[in-house]
Amino acid sequence: MSTEPALVALDRALLDLRRFTAAPAVVDDDGRAIELSSLLVLDALRDEPASVRDLAARLDVAHSTASRFVTRSEQAGLVARTASPHDGRESWVEATEAGRTLTERAETYRIARLGAVVAGWDEQDVTDLSRLLTRFAQESRDVSAPRPSAGPRAAPRRRAAPRDA
Image (cartoon, rainbow, N blue to C red; front, top):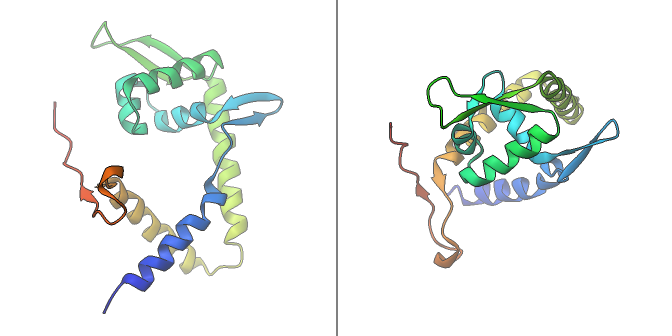
């Protein structure tokens, strides 16, 4: 039995979801412009400080990009840098009180928006969607996209497991 029809339907659904997940580069927070990159940094930090290198890995961006994101977040008063207790050449980044408050408001907004979408669903359907979408998201991180020069029919490759340093 071929899974291709289901994969085509999944592809269409994911394309349709772009409208739901698309976010402007800058959002208004009670009259203050907050860059989306700052929200991504705050989400990557959660409740623990991290180095810029760790944030780059969590955000799947280059170190220089993560550094720019952190600088913008710091200028907005959402994060603060401190010296690393382990390596004087490295700084730690942690959310400020303003950053933690913004993170909570952003999550509350996203949860309410999701709740509105699934308001008429059975609880089991919501639980199943959560479980399967979480699995899909995790497994999609493990598969690399085909190289653009390889053409549209190139098969994705599994990413190599990260090396322990």
